[in-house]
Length: 197
Image 1 (cartoon, rainbow, N blue to C red):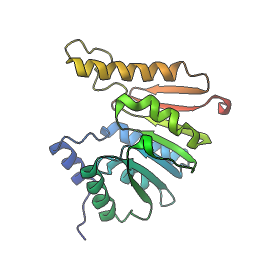
Image 2: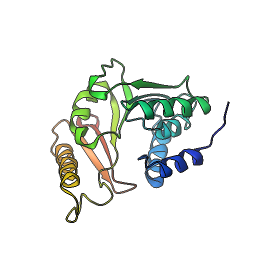
Image 3: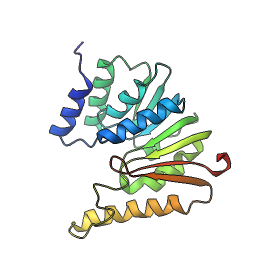
Image 4: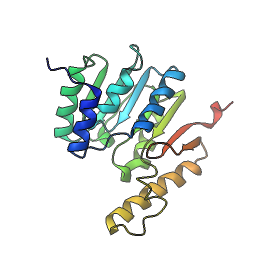
């Protein structure tokens, strides 16, 4: 068994342009998981398994279900998760998240996949959230382009528009309350309104 370290995953992501969470973003998320006694996590967008491994390492009681539709990423994630001996606590589903049907409830749902589908992911999986659970979304500042996309290509501008639509969707949501945190690449934490103290 080849033993790899977290720094190896970070290096791999850098070399092969795999989008993983920025350092201060992941640190914030791990701290949140620790402080809020999160045990059951659903992640939309596995990539190489970096964030699911980091989340599972917070506590031995944590179980992560993570969904990935790209076969190369899926296989890379399986290999990495196995080398951290976490394959008994991280379940990787190889499918498009919008085609996945889950009955389980989760303390935390982490959305970090195709940005153009954020609203669809939110609407689909909000039913899998525990009453006191949270939905965490990453990449809401999209490298600062959400504030200013003047010099971007047409495709990037369209993507930025979709992220802005998602931010508006969260801000105007009658059922949920969202806190926006400008850490990492922009994170939001969303919870059901009835559970606000």
